[in-house]
Image 1 (cartoon, helix red, strand yellow):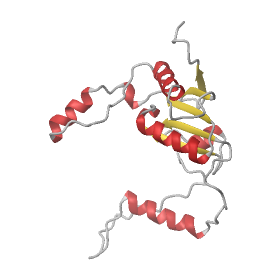
Image 2 (cartoon, rainbow, N blue to C red):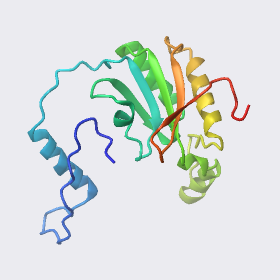
Image 3 (cartoon, helix red, strand yellow):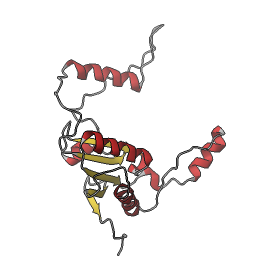
Image 4 (spheres, rainbow, N blue to C red):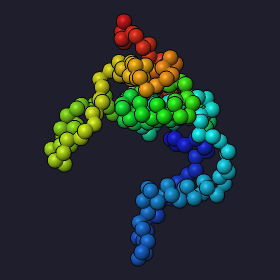
Length: 194
């Protein structure tokens, strides 16, 4: 599944032969660079501004199964897309949203978590395990969760209460079902099952 906003370009086939002296072995990165060369051959500057046409910022998980532009019917230039593990609203997400709103004119925020997320199975013990392995505890939190709906609510609340964001009225949260492709909207004030 592609996450690009333009028609996907197939990656060149992997070269299993040994590289000659001075050549780099074929790697995923080399294949991506080659795919970019193919893309650039037909590329035309769309003449767009950096400001999203639809004045919306989408915050979502980095999961490779989420093709946000396709799933939301978006085109190149329509939105800002901000992604991280879990799609949780962290200080860095607030930083990006602040720049998006104050410098580039977005007014709406769409938050998207998804089913079968890897953060459902992680705990903060992950940080402790890293500390044991590398000798230094990470300064960041894992931000794992057990309840998707509640974490979407928490993320909505973090956006709605940030003093840095001037536009906090149009903030909506969803869970994307990776099996059906459908979004399920989360009521910001109602815990699941009530």
